[in-house]
Image (tube, rainbow, N blue to C red):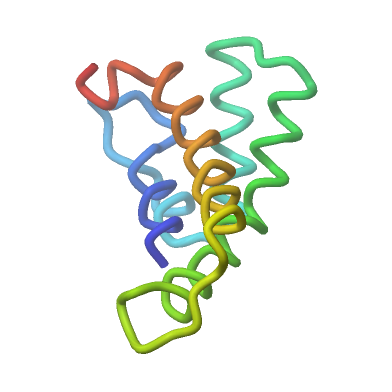
Length: 108
């Protein structure tokens, strides 16, 4: 999935080192868990931030269904505008947070 690929690229190792095979080929839940631990070591996240990121796993997994079955990519039934905005904002909020604390890996 797209979300799995995103977390696969955000490795728990420094950007100049190769990824561990365990991280590259593990489940999304496992990758996110390892990633949160690495973030916590480098940024000392609050329990709330760690929980939000961990809870986002299920949201990311469901997002594939919405992307494939509730979007203009195919002849699909679309969610109403407020719901579509809520889905988009929920997913991008987590990604924006990660990008903000991992700016060097994103070239920002």
